[in-house]
Figure 1 (cartoon, helix red, strand yellow):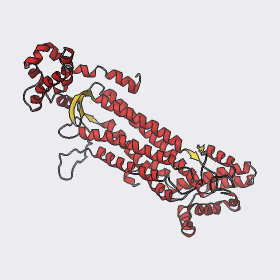
Figure 2 (tube, helix red, strand yellow; figure 1 turned 135 degrees about the horizontal axis):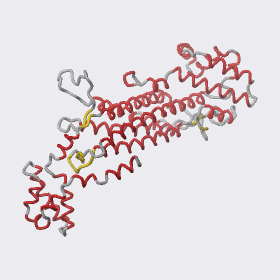
Figure 3 (cartoon, helix red, strand yellow; figure 1 turned 30 degrees about the vertical axis):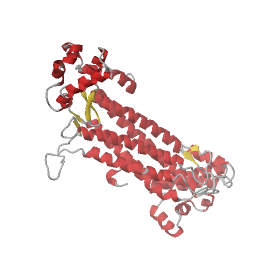
Figure 4 (cartoon, rainbow, N blue to C red; figure 1 turned 180 degrees about the vertical axis):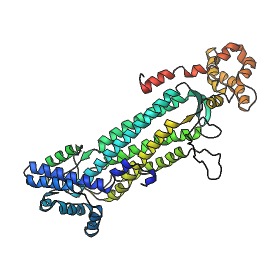
Length: 435
């Protein structure tokens, strides 16, 4: 993670200071539980809390110790002992490093998930507001990038709202799946630490007890967490790509807000580029890139190895910080998006009424014409219009085969734009409920 694409609250979760503070809390809660069980003196547990809580852990000192001992948790415990004194001999009793590392990691992931869920809520609020603003703003719907049939810009945003509502549910589920604690000892058998210690620490840290662990918490949980981040990133890219296409000069139905004093190009003063959504697209690619390493972390040797460790130290901060930044950027884009209804209407009419071809096709079949013949009749009048020769309604009215079946007023009725908007309310109620 780099400062350019980081927000302080999320970045702080992954700082050494935060990590060491969580490590201490895990150790201190474990000492409390052991004191309650009569395993360690209660006075020692109290002193561990008092001294550790007041301590300012020196990351430089811990790094110095680690350079000698080549073990991060031992380095921390050694430094903690410098603050606690003789009672530190009761810290980490019966525990293994992964008890601390994995439980801490899951605390960090759940805190990160909480921020991401709040980010999605912010995006959902912006999408809902703009969707209702443009609920009945007609625009052309496109398939394969080609004009298809009319829709509304509000419906485009409603689609995104529904998608990010699902994203929110996935994040909530991913948070729940990864919010587990393991204080089970060297290979997960609780041989040297009572299961009640694990239960106490889990409750104190806001986690659930891992039903069965080896020396580590199973990594399928984490794979699902990062896969969820990847899916959310893909949804972000889909919406960002839509806005990028709508900002193209030939389309220009909507564009990113361009602030006073902003410059679009170092060489062309006229440029207004979709830089924010292009940035979101790039960041989404990064987040998806972290999914495969998380999946590969699932298959570890026997009760544990540490091939996953270096991976997680990289992907966890980067994926969560990047997604947090991108979600906030996307919410800002939606909130300030400049929309051009007049251009939407102009583009809607650009093909001379061809967007109503299906209605004419259906009208002919309802009058007894076979679908194959009706299709040929409509298409032969549509193709000249596609090539810029005439307008669709006039050609249909001049076609003797069409005129045998449909009167002029019946043809005209099939060009009513309101027909395509008649169920917008129904869709909005499905997506947003009753307003």
